[in-house]
Image (cartoon, rainbow, N blue to C red; front, side, top):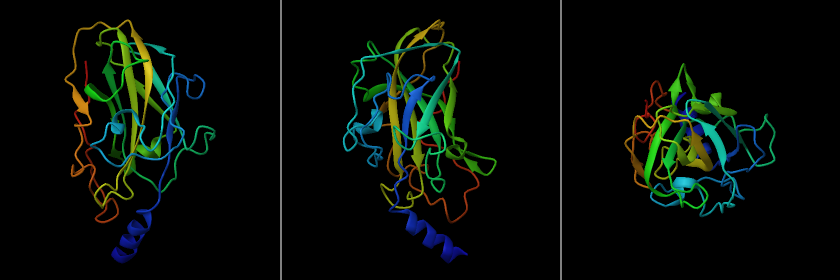
Length: 228
């Protein structure tokens, strides 16, 4: 069994799981989201592309913003490609966590995305013998009610770990939506991290084998989830 498992892991090394955060709150595909023209991953956590994608996956600028009320749920739709249906989200063999970050900005349309100011608002790692990816299709998160109103970038992220047993084998999929948060109390300010900077290639949640030994617990990389 160990030999078979290791062979399976080796075969997975060269497979890209390809997925895109395509819609927010039922708006049209790509509306107010910096979606890429190609659905490939980022594998180098030290590049600016780890923030909002780009580089090998050129993103399309958007001049739109989506208004989201503090304390409300936001629904992030993930699909294999920009034209895929609900039955085609990501290859079922690719496992890993699903997370969401936000960044307070002066203007969500013009902010470059990378750099300081990011904080995590949601994380679905491994529980009940299933990965966050297994529960994916629409990622439902809550916008913290205690945030100050204003413009933010909302970053949906998925990490595919099928090749993570080798350095730079983890595959990061992320896009940034441009939102305006209304009705927030501003009662609490989150501690923030930088992207790039929050992840290291050797973090235990990034460099690991998910095939052998069998995963029984997992902590996603990055900061703790901000709560009000």
